[in-house]
Length: 471
Image (cartoon, rainbow, N blue to C red; front, side, top):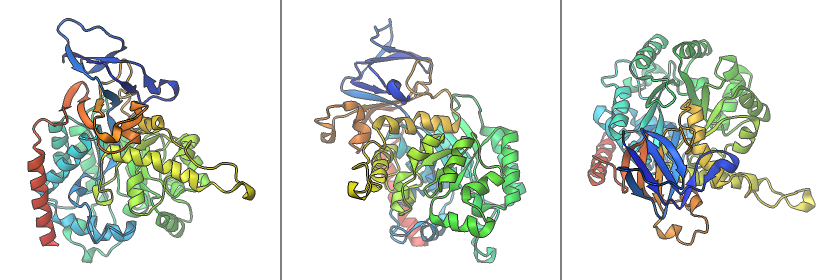
């Protein structure tokens, strides 16, 4: 792999904590896919030079929770104003049987392209589109599409071995799997695709849809043991709404996080999406075990679920990452929109707690609840930590060259006193001058090689028409 030099950067965000969150640069050298030097650098003979004047560099985003098949389910009128449980029935479950191999591949590609154009280089997809006798392999399709686009891809292989509905009422696409069938497929996927290397391009994760509803307690214990024997991480949804609290109390006489502890689903190899509704004791339990979170602020806002207590979680020791969730509950399923929302919502959550001084209050607002540097860290090195991708530890020497280069030439960025914060603080979608994954250019001048956006859009419109007719 060639050596190249990114020159004259206006700002560098590293994704690292504290004083290391920024680097003066202004140059970054990449050699054999790894960051070789950062500073005031002279060009080497024959080295490719990339003029980054008026650009800012970020680590490529790491998205730790998605549902790519939902990329064809945006803005469904039956679900647009529904909370989580009725939304599940109205949109993703209603359309689940509509997906054949071609529609699934198209949805996956749309979601990956949308993420790439925001500067995302790593995707962890919680794919739960599996059922007995399925005529196509969604796992294989996802890995194929990610490889073609040059992305790092983590398959969180979902399942449900039981359902809350009567099986007789279900279409084949909604029928549960058996535990033996699921574990056999996990073993096969691990053998075919899982690479445990720190700079892996492919990972497999065991990920039943939700612990409380998708499997029996003994099955969850067996899954956890099997995953750890295979060297795989564990992922699921948890505590997205108060419904999780009610269900855990009614079914098991405990809190949701306590239930997960009972069945072996806490630890440094586990992360959960959402974690919006938590008691103080649950936060301490998550932190004490090093269990991570994929914070999904836009989906949580869109479904009216609430705002996760990220600052309290991080203070307790919980590794924090960011996920965009599925496009059916997040019509802007990209990492720029998501990090912008994370920045604002943590401030809003903190500000909501403010009370007047005459009632005992002691602060006015919550602008100190999250800095842009915090959000960049959560969305990059935080995600790499949760996924166990140890070679993606930010923009520093010796780490993988997963770099997003933004040119802030839209009027929304004009007048910025601190260009480094522009992509997160100003929102919108900056012009992506380039993105590298492991030193390989996967985006150049805001374009993805081999992707015709006009054609992709036409295919999406046709697919939506087809799905509407069948539903």
